Length: 66
Image (cartoon, rainbow, N blue to C red; front, top):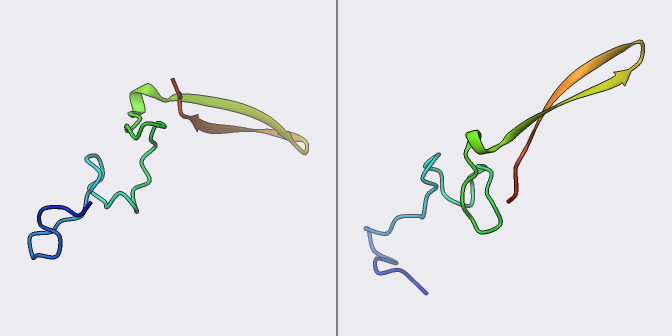
């Protein structure tokens, strides 16, 4: 369904409320229902991998999907 201002000079793209990019270009993490996952709701996970003689500590972010 086209918007009220579709095809006029007042037409604006739908943008993300967090990064102000169009929703097609937005890379903010989202839940399945489309809500943005805030950084305070994400868990940081630290993984220790053995590579060669020394180990490396890698930081990975996982999104908590509740």
